[in-house]
Length: 495
Image 1 (cartoon, rainbow, N blue to C red):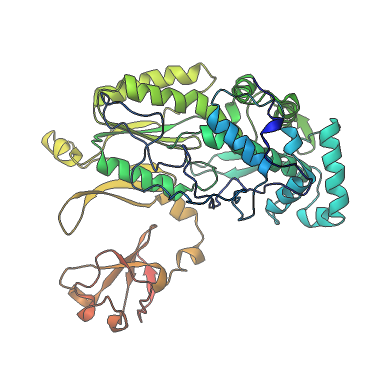
Image 2 (cartoon, one colour):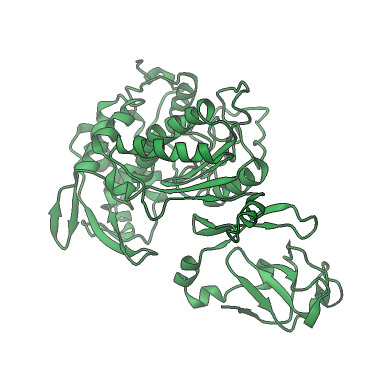
């Protein structure tokens, strides 16, 4: 264990810092990272020698900068401080490093950028303070918050409990943190991301800088189509955020963080409890969904519970090809052999039980899925292959029209479509749809438009204005984007 204050290349000033919202932002860094070089890492062959770096499918690596700047840009495009850059470099070079001095990176400048990274219209916590109210006399508030954090006088407030409906009709509990808790959590996440973005595996996509749900979906599609996948395990961890063990959470964090002040901050948030209808209750397990720090804690938890374990299992136990895609607690795995899939499922249940977790019996499914699924099921008289849902999209097998090659299609899941408002379902225009003919011959002069949600019919088309169009849409479109299409008809849903 080393003291890491000396890793900064230049002196630290209070105005230096890094702003990052670790959700749904596009990273602006072109440096190749171990965790960034893959869309979905899969085992090429269990008998081949592999390097420790993650490999990927479906997307090439970003090009490394030829001339490196002395300061790297953050997700917002601003330059990251040399101090945080030094933390990332040390984490990359020394995989077993435990960082003993991190809190000094939490400067007034970083707190300010963390404040502006928050959502302006977010609901207030138990303190009742909104973003706009806190902005008045902002500098005085930030200096006071910075001083309280560093002298140990900062106190975490309980989260305000609210409920939102789930797709299955149940209620999902959320915890809305107080505004100052959000600010400090955002700053801490910015610091810890320098360590964990180096450690996290390439098949992990949830709530990470520069990664999105659509990348996870693309990775899954590429893995199923390019690898020998015949069985798909759609796994769901029951109440993951509500059942994260606090003791295990801290042990996992301590693998890389030895700064006692940073650890105490995390413990304060875990133990702060929740307030519901004015009544405070203690939280002995779990972390509030909705807290800024919760996604990072969840990723760290599953990094040690699942990611590291499944990587070893894939290389040493699996007999055939195997793919993995994880978005937070949503997991999909593909297997070449059914025996591998069934063995993995048994051992995965045992693995989760050691850390206070379990699979949802009704939502965890092992299905036959892949290029040979339809043929095999037809021979057994079992009908069409089953479908599965991942990140709100239903995946089903199909064939390309041009060469009849196997392909994976996806549409918005039925429950997601029904929950969206009617105006949003009708707010599609010809510039955002993909058009194909209902018939190769253009029968009845009808074009069909499909988005990544549901099929739409375009009536009374006037396709002459489209450069991609042939006579009457007859064979003009084969799932091609028509951003310049100006169809004269109206778009109406089929449902």
